[in-house]
Length: 293
Image (cartoon, rainbow, N blue to C red; front, side, top):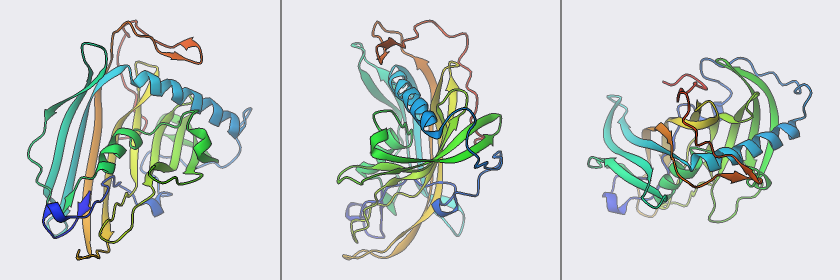
């Protein structure tokens, strides 16, 4: 996303994944969070938990590719004098399968983009697709330092809490950095709060990515899928190269709804095990990981 008082075509890039709480204030948990208990887990080591949830995330990542769902992305710039939007990007997309069983995206609603002070960048769309619905699979583990922080009760869920950060920032790649909450029973991620890194801070080319929070819910009584990302914050641009220094207040909401398993003859295989569930579920109730606002 770009922020500038210049015409839109001349604006520098800026990522828009802002969050409802600042990254430096992440210790101030939202309502519904119990106190963090830093004592070691009983009858299991932190490394064993990491190994278990990474393996479950690998399964989840494959399974979600066999589901259809609707994704809505809404980005507002906020006039701080009125606390009302003065520009908006909105797009609703159905993630489907074509007649050959391949992934297909169908835009069902996309009114005119009225953003003037900012513009969406390629990294914004990549973050929406890959980092906001974050998964930390067995294949991803070598890229991250994972630190056990403790146990925490969120609403009706007991979780293990970890800090995750990339070991090395490779050029041209983006990573998640922040906190991860893992359900103690299912060993799947139920909440994340962090940011995409690294930022591009070159003046005139600023591509910034403030923190975001993503909530997950249980689908078909089996998988914890991302359902809601909430973001809000003010980003500061230093300007340079002819661009003006300015602050831009952004409000972003991404929703993933209507998960339905795609009925096909293809199988989902992980570690030699068939994890495909082609039986119609009794229900598709989703249990909230945390209150959504």
